Image (tube, rainbow over all chains, first blue to last red; front, side, top):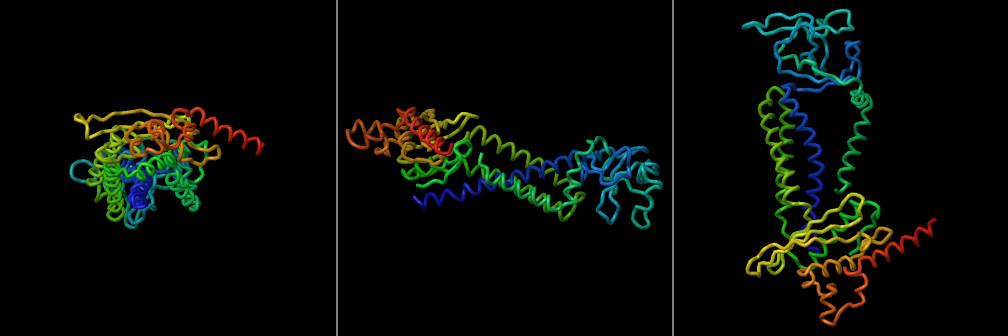
Length: 175
Length: 220
C-alpha cells in the first residue's frame, strides 16, 4: 500500500505546485498579452512625480497605447531616457520630421516644470526619437490606485510580505 | 490510517480529506490507479508554465524590442493551452478523484460539494469489461460529511468505507467485510456495523451531532 501511496504522492505535489505556477505565469502572460496588444513594453505605468500636475498626480495609473505612431503636439507620452530605465510621463510640445524619410522626433515638457526636457535627456540628446524612445501615448488613467506600487517600491519589505502571503494561500488552500 | 485534524466547518478541508481517504481506500483494495486524466492536466499545465518561463527569461535577457514577435506567439500559445486545460478540467475531469482498475472492472470516482451544504456528492462510473456490452454505469451517491467526520474534525474510516462498499457493488465485491448487504446475505461478518452503514446515514450523523452538543456544553 505504501508503494502505491508513494506512487501517487509526486503527482499530487506536482498538481499543487502547478496551481501556484499557473497563477504566476498567467499574471505574467496577461501582462505580456497586453504588451503585444498595445505594442508597448510597459502598457500600464504609475506616475511617480508631480511634474505633470494638475493633469496627473503621484499615484495615477496610466494606460498606454503605442500603435499610433503619428504622435501629435499636446499628446502625453511616456518615454525612457537612453541609458536610464526610468519611464517619464510628459507632454509633447514640439515635433520635427515625420513625413517621408526623416524619423519623427519629439520635444517634451512636464506641465508643472518651468523648462522643457532637454536637461533630462541623455547627454548630447536634444529630442526624442518617436520609434525608439517612446513607450506609448497615454489613452486613459485611473487616479490614485497606483499608489500601492509607490508604497511597494518605497517599502520593499511589503513586496516580500505580499509574495509570501500569496504563495502560502495558493499552496495551503486546496480547492 | 490516521488523518490530521481539520476544521469541520471548512467545506474544502472536508472534501479534500475525504478525497484523500477515498483514494487510499481504493488503493488498499488493490485497485490499480489510472493516472491518464491527471497526467494530461499536468502535461498541459506544465507546458504552458514552461512557455511562460521561457518568455520571461527571453524578456529579461534580450528586452522587449528583440522578443516582440516571439512574445506574441508565446502569448497565443499560452492562451490556447490554458483554454485546453480549462476545458479538460471542466468537461473531462469533472472533479475526478480516483480512477482505477481491478480484474477488468474500471471504476472512476468524481466528487463535488455544493456551497454551504455539508454533503459529499460522489459520481461513480463503473465499466465492466467482462460484460458483453461494456457500457459505463454511472451512479450518483451522496452522504453528509457528519456521517464520517467526528464533530471535532477527525475522519473516521469505518463508516466511510462501509458507505462505499455498501453502495457500490464493484467495491463491495472486493471489500466484503465492509459491504453490509453482502455481509447480511452471507450470514457472516460485521453485523454490528450496520448501524453506521449507508442505510442509516441519518442515525450516524445523529451520533456525530450528539458528540458536538456534548462538546459544546463542555466548552460553554
